[in-house]
Amino acid sequence: MMMSLLPFFQWCEASALGNAIRTSPWAFAVIESIHLLGLAAIGGAVLVVDLRLLGLGLRRQSVRELAREAHPWLVGSLVVMLSTGAALFMSESIKCYYSTPFRVKMTSLLLALLFTFTVRRRVAMADATTVRPRWQRLVALISLALWFGVGASGRWIGFSG
Amino acid sequence: MSLSHLCEWLASTRGSIALHESLYMYPLVESVHVLTLCLFVGLAATLDLRLLGLTLRRVPMSEVAARLLPFMACGFAVMIATGSLLFYAIPVRSFHNVFFRLKMIMLVLAGVNAWVFHGGVYRRVFDWDLDPIAPKSARIGGALSLLLWAMIIVSGRMIAYNWFDCDKPQPAIIMWTAGCDAYPR
Image 1: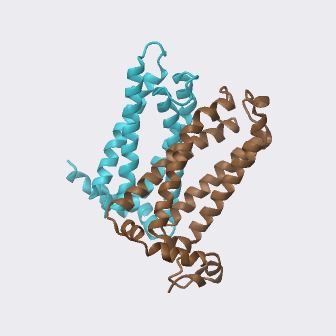
Image 2: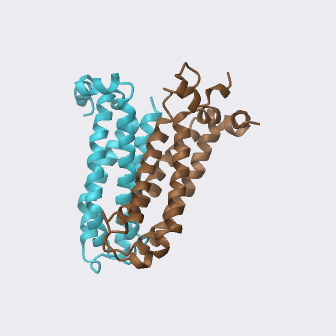
Image 3: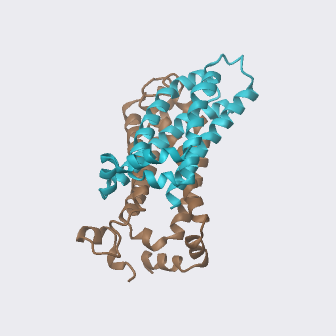
């Protein structure tokens, strides 16, 4: 199934955007820096809620209130992460195609997004009395594990190849 | 003994060489350093945004600070420890790197900013604890903190690029700011 994607990766690599970033001496570095700033922001937005689900951090506020406050920052930083990430990808798509860490990252990212906007969102927005603390903790741990997977494998793309 | 010589000596120690040449330890330490950004800068930014009235407006300021500070302290300790190890692995090049120097200056400024905030307007936090937007001096502290940490992240990332390294010809301004005259040849 992955084989059929190669032409798409080749098209990305040959695109005007990919070419422009690749030939510029500083574009990759600048986009990567913005990607990192987004990492710090998304880290805060995810952690504030996941810590609370674990019974840590801002314990006197309800999970729902924190989730509501964090939501615009989560979505905003995701937009920054996905757009800068896509630009970085366009500049080295062929390398990404053959990179195991890249495949791990995309898989974890897909799972993290699905989990965050379905299960985690429902649990966070639910009435506090209807979800047992044990389930809240499990949801937080899965969320943290998935996002950690995205970050760690993302960093590893740069180390391999 | 100059700082540059100290770095040369550091680079000759067994631990530094081992870390520099290790296949997995160096990337591992660097990954921990980068990912801890989420814990430390992510939560520090939450605090700064609360000061600016951009999030958690209904939560008392002192509560946000007290509840998040332990996690930020953990994150900061990990960042300093892993950052020191990264420097220990590549001391000479780092010391003569303009972005590394810029980062260290920004770190000191961020420290001074936090010290001024905690010794000043934060002492009277109970006067403005429930205000959705903090007083002006606290907002300035929050905005400065956001700006400084953003610059620390960007300059930290740029250390990896060799555009301004002393081992190739550089304009006078870089020679001076990177201290290239003391760079071992």
